[in-house]
Length: 388
Image (tube, rainbow, N blue to C red; front, side, top):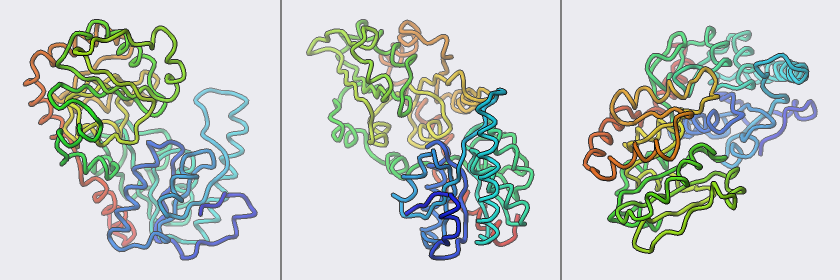
């Protein structure tokens, strides 16, 4: 069970002194690569009880980490916004409290190495590791590093880079660790994956997904295109709306038109826990370009139409997409350009000539790093042994 980082709980020690501390989270994009690396450490013989997560009280780590059997300590506060606001005063105080608690925790437990994933909790732990002389490895999930990782990377023995050319010192290209179900999906046949999801075996399948909340831009473009795709008996669309837009699906812009029985096969769902099956079943994906998403597309070898989130910090999603696009495994459409018309212009040639998807799949797969978790674990174990 995880406990909070309050003073009442601060004195409670883990059952065993941790060998490694994995710090960060706040979002699933930061946390999941850390969980995958932790599982790799366990596979190598380290006990789960000796891999300690330190995260944010407000983040998904409060529930996801204990569910995976790892101990967790939760720090107060939240990230500081990029503008001068009154809320940042409270955030600054929370960050100071978190830093103090992280320093006390690391001084007491003295792990052999710390892995910083990004987010304010990782800053508190990474800075404490630097002060205490504990080896530090930084892992960033994007092609342009986040501000937290850029701040602490100067103290790191090495930085695990998800993409070539990431702007961190002592960067080692490892790729982005992805969930084991994605690795398994890379060897799953389309026929088996489609059978699991109830998708037709003899059509081109478009998978639409854009995170747990979804994307209004993508969802609107897809629903708006359905009328002109209604007669396509050679196409199936599996549309993961996301929880935010699913609640609005009765609005006209999200309401699909009537479809003929022998035409387009269209299924809309709120959320899917079977993303591995969906990636394996699909011929083409339409999605955002988060670091984990791009890594998953590459490992499975799924051609894609990528629509980078325009408000992503430093426009990092466009940078994430660049490798797949340059290799020929994806097409890029800016958020402002995405419309039903533009979607059809990208989609129809690929449906009409599905053989064009084969070289795109090979190009996407060439960008994958299925051994990313092992590479990051190598860096962490090397840091613990005093090797750079």
